Image (tube, rainbow, N blue to C red; front, side):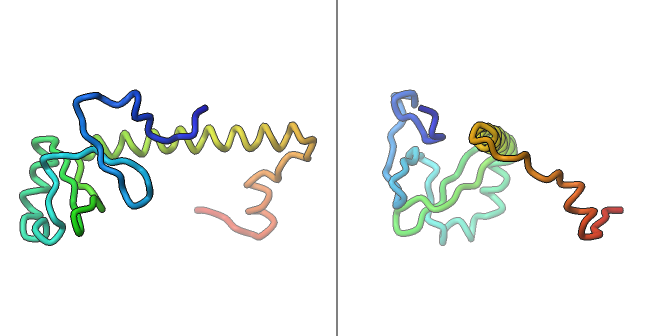
Length: 119
């Protein structure tokens, strides 16, 4: 079943994982630093992400809360998320149609009905 969650069985065996507050798991990294320390080193951390392609995990009270990542990583994550959202939309439309419900109203018709135009 594809539920969009991380499959730890398929994760690289040489990585360690830490449970997060949301019961997800996060890869442990030698590039984990407290958020308060990161503030003073922000320019350095940005340079590392941009030029060295480093991923830096920011922690608060020892728990991962955010990350500074290269734009390529961010773009890849966005593409995965967009593909997953599109899959969910296709499934919802198929379920709607399989239940015998009428098709939705085209976006253009809704805009026209309310006099909304984009110029």
